[in-house]
Image 1 (cartoon, one colour):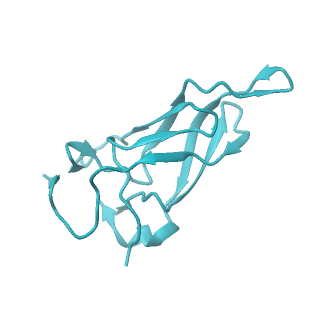
Image 2 (cartoon, rainbow, N blue to C red; image 1 turned 120 degrees about the vertical axis):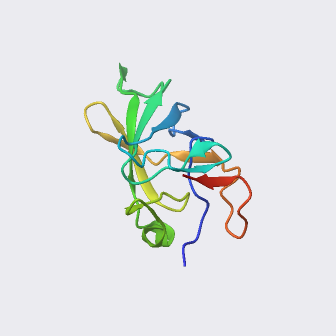
Length: 125
């Protein structure tokens, strides 16, 4: 049984340094086919970009640029969209700089909707 809240385009996420994390749904016919409160459900195929990170290392800017998620946390592989595991707030993730230097885990500040046990706000096509 999957445990956690489904990540989607309406979730507020940030890097550990205050930057904003935004999911960019993967392309293809199924992109955005499943929605929660009008926002596409995030899958392991989605890209996540970071903007506004102010991280500095030894006086040099080293901002977070992207987030990579592992869809194995919380049993997420049991829930898929077009065969691709959905991401849960319990899924493991790491922020990276443009040079792919690990910067720390992202912060999921708010998960509205996506609650297990109810279908309100969930649509698919």
